[in-house]
Length: 364
Image (cartoon, rainbow, N blue to C red):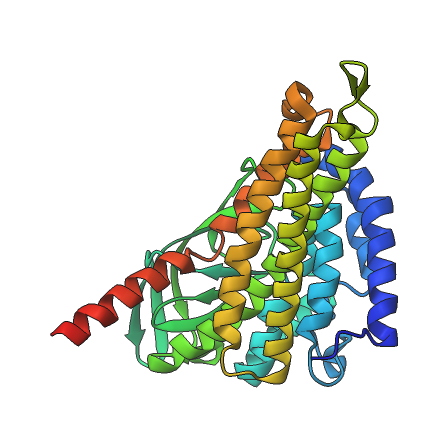
């Protein structure tokens, strides 16, 4: 594996880092309190190439050639350092665009890419708990049940649904959606949806046995992105904690000199660095078609989820009582950490159940 960034990647990292530190961090407190991103997010981010980076150039997007998940992971880490909620909005179009380009019909591409190129959003929903009822209706599908909560769904024009027996893209026109503001990623335009729809055959990307393989690939893309952003949030938590500890004086000295707090920060920073490297490794595996890429993506998400949970809790401890006050940034980061564990199901539990099933099968 070559760890050297090419010129384009270096430029992207530098540009997104500046955007995250200058804009996202400045907007994050008000966006969190209001439960909505500022209006200037979309025009500012659009100028930097977000929202249509996975849409083919032939369809008024920016993608020429193969999509780089490694570059996306580098970008996602910087976005996570800025604001997890707004990062989710900036990344939300990638999975739907890549999936429709790879498996979608001409009509599905025209509908989705036309919407995204004109400023629309698309969401990804994984029916990890099997709440959807899906049945064949001729060549079409009949889908009923609940989706979500899902970020970006409140304002998305389309939603890509990964279910057990089908993967499809659905226009949200006429879909009953209930917007919500959870404790984490409050500016992420979350919503649940109650589906009672006929999905035309042209909007179905995969069904039956093929749906499992297609769904796993889509979720691998999403999990690598989540892992990179989680590592960014964990890193940001330690950056804020270090700055506070080096300024806060207690018992006649700066608390940043207390050995116990140094160790606390050091362990969290080690975990964050490890999570970032794991996310980049999983992204490289996706880009190069490694046979274990999907498994690496899942494990990277788990490692990063553990790292961001621990780092944000430790950051709050370093701030002491101030850590629970929303005038300081780490209280928000601790709430944001929860979403990285909850989205797209608990694949760690899935591996445990699968291994148990395999062992029991061997005994029989």
